[in-house]
Image (cartoon, rainbow, N blue to C red; front, side):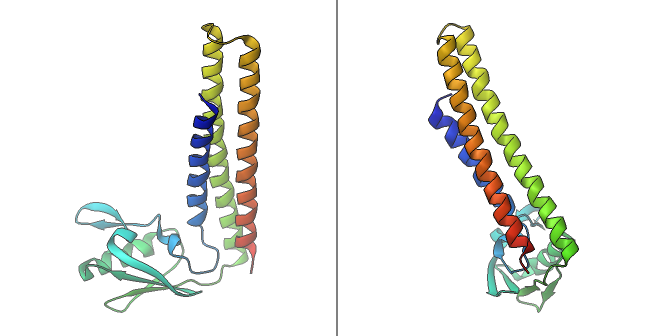
Amino acid sequence: MKEKEIQENMNKSIEATQRNFNTIRTGRANASLLDRVSVEYYGAETPIKSLATISTVDSQTISIQPFDISCLQAIEKSISMSDLGITPNNDGKVIRINVPPLTEERRKEFCKLASKYAEEGKVALRNIRRDAVDKEKKDEKDGLISIDESRDNQSEIQKITDKYIALIETKLSEKEKEILKV
């Protein structure tokens, strides 16, 4: 694998981890909270953002206005059934979600969830590293590159991996600070 290709794959892993972090509640209203919630709509699981306009009215309220009023009940049910711990209010046209402040216990749960997402991101990075190192070893075995060249490439791959793992750690600490901020 080329260095550029490795970095592209690792960037994708970082982006996926960041998307996971964005779905964690922090006590403030954020439209990305609903990214993981999908609705049973005409027999298919459909993301809420495909069915409605999601906006934040203020720091504590999310507003969901469906394109098709008939799916209002289904959206409300999906939000209620989700693991977000929030209750939607339906006024017949718009669903409003009041995002309550997080309890200390809930904050700790979300920190654990963030750590889990960070670990998943690190595992993905390590898998990319493993694949790249295996390719280097294979090239060395096939005689395409020398042993020294292979070792240099492997150490370079490790440096890249370490850099990206540190980036995930930084993003995790930022997210934890955001979650724990009262």
